[in-house]
Amino acid sequence: MNSPFILVIFGATGDLTARKLMPAIYRLVKAGEITQEPFIIGVGRRDITKSQFHSMMEESVRHAVKEDFDTALWKKIVAGIDYQMGLFEDAAVYNRLVTKLEAFDAKLKACVPRFFYLATPPEHYEVILKHLDGSKLAEGCGQGTTNYTKVLIEKPFGKDLETARTLDKLLASIFEERQIYRIDHYLGKETVQNLLAFRFANGIFEPTWNRNFIDHVQITLSEETGVGKRGAFYDGVGALRDVVQNHMLQMLAVTAMDQPVAFDATSIRDMRVKAMQTIELIGPEDVGKNVVRGQYEGYTGESHVDAASQTETYVALKVMLASERWKGVPFYLRTGKKLGKKVSEISLHYKKPIVCTGDLCLFPEPKVLRNVLAVRIEPNEGIVLRVMVKQPGLGMLDLTASMMHFTYREAFGNKENPDAYERLLLDSIRGDQTLFARTDEIETSWKLVTPLLDGCKNTQTPVYIYKHGAIGPREADALIEKDKRSWFLI
Ligand code: BG6
Image (tube, rainbow, N blue to C red):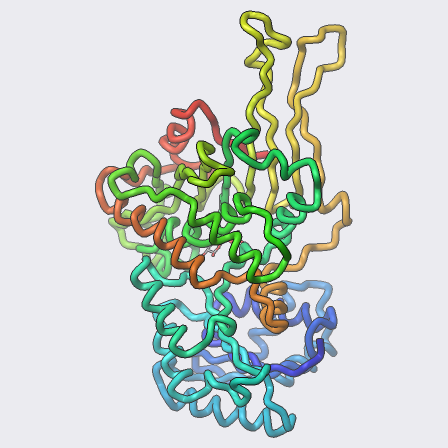
């Protein structure tokens, strides 16, 4: 796709632009997926020149793509990158953008599609959106035609149900839903999408994907690193808002959803939201029974973190779904920072086969473990099936668990999967909203998470301290062990 476009990034000197957006743009250009000459304006509060901005971006792209860096190509790209310093609340910033964007349209003698990417801390969203509206930038030059503008907005999308609704109202007063791209980068991950292909393109799994066969489901998003330089953002936000409300619930939705009629935005998003809507609400009074929070040792000593902070850096929870498909099947979710390893994984734990008839047993019952189908989102993307096999030898009763593997590396070589941001940027340029959260998904997720946050304000969910490298506080083990199950990772 070589059509020109304009991308305005608010928060251009921030971490996201450097680590994700610029490398994604570079890779898309290199792959011939988008024009070699995009027009990009970075808007930031830092007082730097355009050429300093170019150097910063070059450094990050070089760092991200390593030996794939092509100097001649970068020169072409950078020729279309501008920087504009300014405060987001200053109307003059937007007036200057109007002039620049109009000049670009005039040069190309076209109404060039405009993308506004909000990559700032969320407290700036409101003021930026209001100025996009006030300056008429939001309208673009082709409103009402196919060249309408689009807005891409990063999470966190609100702090609770009320603030999310306020933000959504504001967005809806300026843009139509088809123009709004709410980013949840987990939806852009290759393996999350492959889960759908795996379920619906194979005849053997989907028939078992329900309460008749599945005992329970686990979803883990474990990180090795702590909050790093993001203490100011993270403190007071915590794991429930930072990843449960979005990435974890989206992974749950993709796992639990019914079959869509087609792989298009409406069908898939309808099914995702339907699955989320079936999650039973946990009222504040029940939070103590279903939620365990933790904080890594040393968190309160991190920079920009309150010394008495009660913010959770770990959370484990159990939710139930009321749907016909999943009634009675618990979904256990856990996520945390400074845990033993970086891994995101979804696993379906099958019911055990019946091996005993009265006192007569084919095998000693405890030796038969559940079959587990685990989808490794990352790293070592792949799918693993735990099966029971007979150990080689003369005895019939010696069973052992063995793993059947499909890994991306074995199947497709060492070629890296596209980064989620590459896919999401490309999809937004193509106008495909499938992998973006719709307004009703946001509303539903906050309806679920807000009572949890309210419940956590009470002392019934203390924040347990855990050590670096542990897989969370011990109390989280109790959450699942009281149901006679245990946490699992491949
Ligand atoms: C982000 C959270 O949305 O997701 C971070 O704000 C978290 O705190 C990150 O580290 C995890 O994403 P990934 O892709 O590294 O698993």
